[in-house]
Image 1 (cartoon, one colour):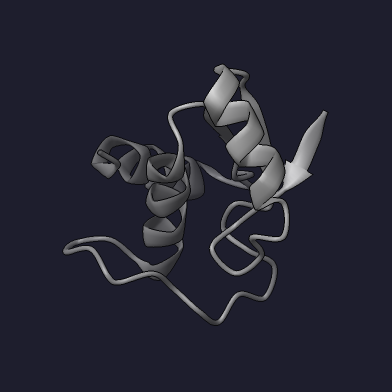
Image 2: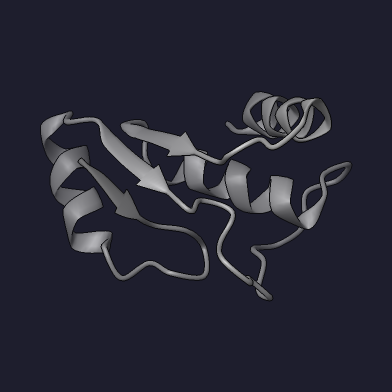
Length: 86
């Protein structure tokens, strides 16, 4: 099962917290946000989308993100964001 969760849509926080407390993987789709216009504090060298993805990965160690990659440039950007998460 996957759940919509991003910086701009944190309505499933209770489920993520439940999973975090129990070490259950949480599969987040839409991690960059649909039509997102808000972004967590910028990270040097990252785009807004990369910053949102890194924020999500930092939110909980049990989070698995499904960012979607329509081309190799998007894939490389997503990998760079994951590498920059804590």
